[in-house]
Image: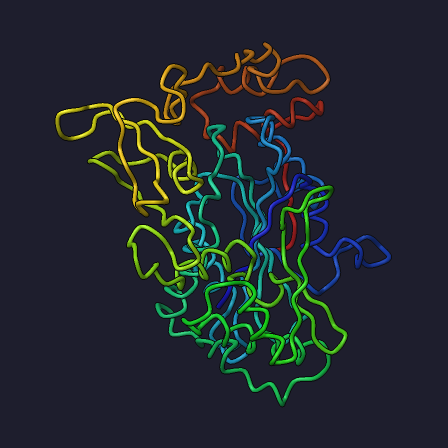
Length: 399
């Protein structure tokens, strides 16, 4: 089992995609390539348009959030086809959401029937029922762990991984992509490689080229492409761990220390430290320190609670001073507090939420009907705004 995560800003486009709107029958009825197998906090009685309206109403609880659409697909191995009926798929999807922190928010689960392996799409609002944003922090790492845990929990097929893929059975771009993966993975696992030049030379010997993507108008590297046999792939399409940032971090771990100093690497760059004189450094202080700048430390152990630290390249070690060695009279410590920009308060309209064509707003309606569950309050509010009787709505999409 694996999951692909996406975010967006348009519920209409996402819902239309997962419900195959472009493949509707001539009479407007849904095609037979999908079915809605679960939903919560979303009105399904009016079909696709009501689903979209439900999500958009919920979005109004936090109108400042740009990427409000959460969307992931759960894909199961073809070997598990007989195990994954609708009930089991919903059960796994709900457990996946809960463990990913996707709770107390509207969602739909749509099963697609157009592939030879079981898979479904889950669309949810990243604004929960209380107007709070559902965090996407560390989504990639959490996703891998949750998928593996659920795969084991339900006794599902565990993929052997890219490294065990039999490349000779592949064809075209897929074969080239796996050839690149194997070459890059071999270089990744070679602990003697610690510079990009060494890394590129290793790949070149395996028939793989490296191209750098630069930020426009600068020499700052923004990403990588790998090339082979005239084909070109972004690093993320080979494997996410091969991004430029991940490669840089990985290679730095392989860099041996300088033979004459434990505080420097062999290439004479300064080795990062997290703590000096009993003080834990901030990220900015670490960056300044490895750049050779002076940093100020407050709360130090010893006789002097405040000292200045700078790396001395002659001594090949960090040295402390009672005053700023660069300019004692005009010291600008790295950890000093600078004045920030003033923050403008939200406008009354932004604080209230949204207003649909005038009249009562959703936050006002919600405040007046706190006795109702959130989903029921939303349903009634939508009906009132459309001039409908909230007590007479029936029907729904096929489940």
